[in-house]
Image 1 (spheres, rainbow, N blue to C red):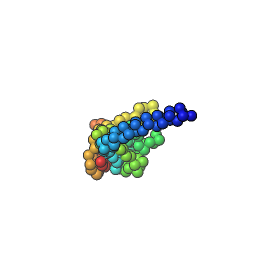
Image 2 (cartoon, helix red, strand yellow; image 1 turned 180 degrees about the vertical axis):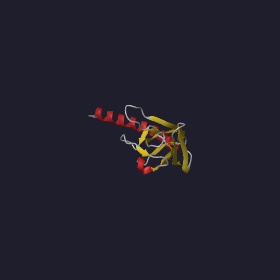
Image 3 (cartoon, rainbow, N blue to C red; image 1 turned 90 degrees about the vertical axis):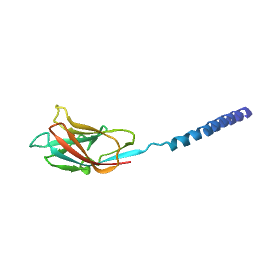
Length: 149
């Protein structure tokens, strides 16, 4: 029994030594934490449709996340503005040192492949109702968004 108890004491002493040695490293990593940036979709306006005189069905993509999701796209007519709620309130939070990719995607009837109207890369900049244009030379969509860090 004495041998068992000595073994437990040795293990406990080793664990205590490791824990004490690791504590300063944990405190240092907390002091150098990353700042975060939040992008919030406000609205998307169809300035010029891909289907001239008709309607477009659109998805909005934030860094690979499709909105509104569930294979549902949003209908646009010429001059239509759709707000965040229509798209399921898209929001992206990321480290403020990263770049986000935003896309407007035209939903086309299968088997025709969907069409990325345009893709833009953003870095974090503080602001509200910021503007960003998506255009492929035919269709044009204008985004309003907020960015906060």
